[in-house]
Image (tube, rainbow, N blue to C red; front, side, top):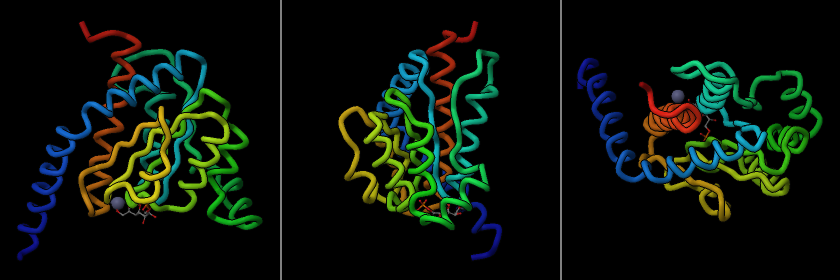
Length: 197
Ligand SMILES: O=C(CO)[C@@H](O)[C@H](O)[C@H](O)[C@H](O)COP(=O)(O)O
Ligand SMILES: [Zn+2]
């Protein structure tokens, strides 16, 4: 296959994955929006974590809540647990990389807060540990996964929301996660501000 055909196939595969996700995930994404809005209105915050591309997604989401998405509105409370290199390196060096997010959840999380846990495989140990800590703190979890959900899909509880991209390939899963993140931001804005005039 020539390079241009490969590029074209990326676009086509991405679009097909997202069309499948529109069928399977629209309803649970609305549930995730309602869960986040309820927490934010009650004064809670959203902690977000993930590795690699998903760390970028966690930061992207927090930026759109604290700054803005498409409309002007009050600042909303969200923190990406992927950004403070002193905290990350100290915890990884002194304890283990597996607990870089869970120790931050223990430090910053309160009952009623939300953990946005992002893992394309559903199997990253540090994201799994973060979910355990969130549950210990009576925080609900919104999990963005792929590949059938992995171990994360097995450990969610009532009140949590599992958004599992219908894909096995990491790239396709990440692309779907970004669309979900924008749908979450849009849904939060519409819930708080109403539909655009
Ligand atoms: O972006 C990519 C691949 O597209 C990578 O950086 C990827 O995020 C990393 O390999 C992550 O460590 C994968 O972790 P996970 O999504 O399975 O939790
Ligand atoms: Zn990537």
